[in-house]
Image (tube, rainbow, N blue to C red; front, side, top):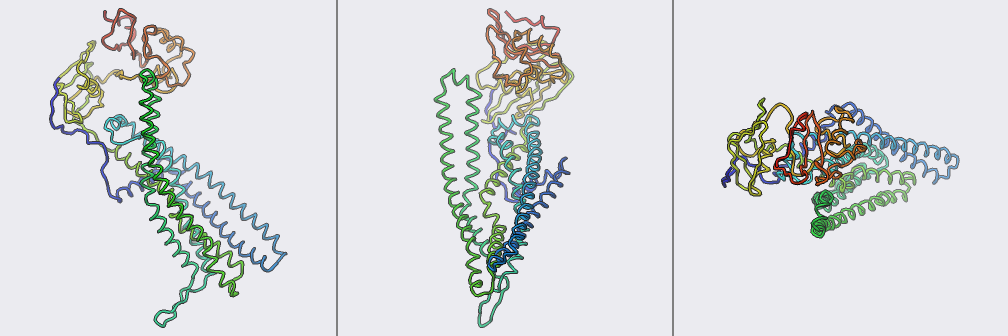
Length: 553
């Protein structure tokens, strides 16, 4: 093996993703939005949307009926029509009862729709992330941060909030049309004089509502612009801090042994300090956004009264007309100003979509393909003209190498020269470089990583990994535990734990520490036999040759 410094061809690019146009991001958003309607669950998707739109229409209809009720109710109060009070009271409860039923069913259907949409997106992204060990390549290349958060949280937030946003837009359109019609009926023309000509524009309340909505939404968007970027930054920092906490939990024993708690605490303190500083900036941005929204809402509550009270004093409107116009004006501006009112949620949604887009880009990135891994019928592992390329413009030349059945090899060399990378190349996990690797197509090849891994689940599932636990009887698995001195765990065969943390990684009184069974093969993950025997390599063998495997003196 030799090391040489030269320009690496086909090496993986530096971490980071290219900046693309807004059009590309919009197309990605539309694809993300519509993919569920074209999935295997398309029948429920379309049915659910139809029901939700019908329920939204029913809710808007009850609001229109409520507006008409206010018109009649305040008129009978003004005219002291006692005989109409009780019938209108009954009508009030009927209208609100129907509104409550529609709202309750809307919550249930939207919740079911959200979890099924989230299920589809989650399973799709998990499958893409796990395909061809993409999770490993992404982690090694450091192309993107915290893919777990993007799957667990960003997709959850997207599926839950985008539905509500879509329904809000539909409700705003139907409400705007309905209450715009009501405003038109109670509106007077706008009259003014230009160059001696008398101009009259009908529907003053409608036009005032449109103008006020445009002005208030423009101010809210201008004030709230920093919220989007700072929300994205906050998500990134929250994920980094959570990763640090998980890192401490996963390495608790090593940290405790080495008295490294102060170091890790300082690292967590620095991560949280960055989180806190950005959160403070986010609060300042949200203060401006909420202030502009509150001012807009407060003015919108009294503006229709200022516009209609003069006509009421003049006798052109009844008190019921004033209250109905006020309610219609508020609902009209709220419907048209849904973007400004929901800007904080929209900012969160934009951040989620941008992070999912970056995750998509990382999933679609193709790594180097210089090293070919070929499966053949021969029982040997061989390499031909093998060269590994690294990120720092260096390479490791291995050349030709063959491991025949029954042979044992020990790979030695200085730290960092590429011993582990050689194993990754044989496993097909290191595509950057050149050459061909041939591995057996028959049987099971097991790589024992430097760090113990057992799948989370039952002990039986961990023992039988990567095979299915259904293929083996409990008695057989218990007998294997007895062979390796772990019979004390026989009663815990169907307990679910993180067994990589539960089992010892090796001790002089417990040899070997853990055993795996799959298709008749057994491999010990930790080989530390009693003295004076020593092991130079890990041992993989198949029964009934158990007694044939002996430690080397």
